[in-house]
Amino acid sequence: MENRPLRIALTKGRLEEKAVQLFGDIGYDCDRLINKGRKLVIDIGGLEIVLVKAADVITYVENGACDMGIVGKDTILEYGKSFYEILDLGFGKCRMMVAVKKGTDFYSGYSRKKIATKFVNIAREYYNKKGMDVDIIRIEGSVELAPLLGLADAIVDIVETGVTLKENGLEVIEEVCPLSARLIVNTACMKLRREEVLELTEKIERWVDRPEGR
Image 1 (cartoon, rainbow, N blue to C red):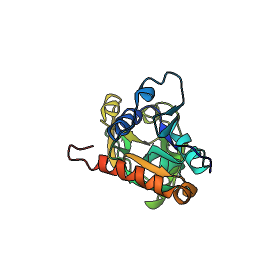
Image 2 (image 1 turned 180 degrees about the vertical axis):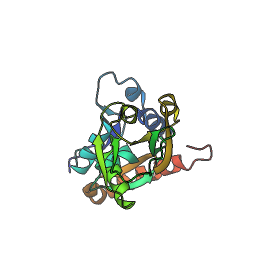
Image 3 (image 1 turned 90 degrees about the horizontal axis):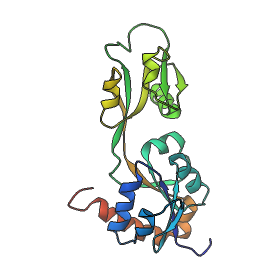
């Protein structure tokens, strides 16, 4: 393995700000990360941070281009295959929920239900466990539209505050799973750079468990 700092793939957007705080709090110089401009690979003094889309965190870590990654549990459930998930970072908390048009009795009738979602694998696994045969419709944009326009009977989506659902006449009927940011590690890296990985993980774990909260 090449002689370089540990390389960590970081999800751009929702989890990025809190992850930058984490690295700063445990002793890394995050000025170049905060003022990164258009740079996608940033050395913060002992770590290389690679900024990518959520699903690509999985790809880079699985294939060894990055040693570790910070990514939401939703992305792990949807795309993850072969890596170690070693720590719940405790931020980016939200829930994967099932929602329907307000006043709808989702479980009534005998017709096959249609579920709209960006998270096809999560939705399919959820309903398989419930023993329900459903049609999954992939939606890349505003999934809330699907029940309103009659495309689907329900949606499976991430819910943080529920405001968007309420404003669009939808209501939550059940929780699929809780979500938060997770630390993942490439399987080969865990063997070849174990001491470095564990040293960094211990620093992060102390940050997660600090008295003032996450």
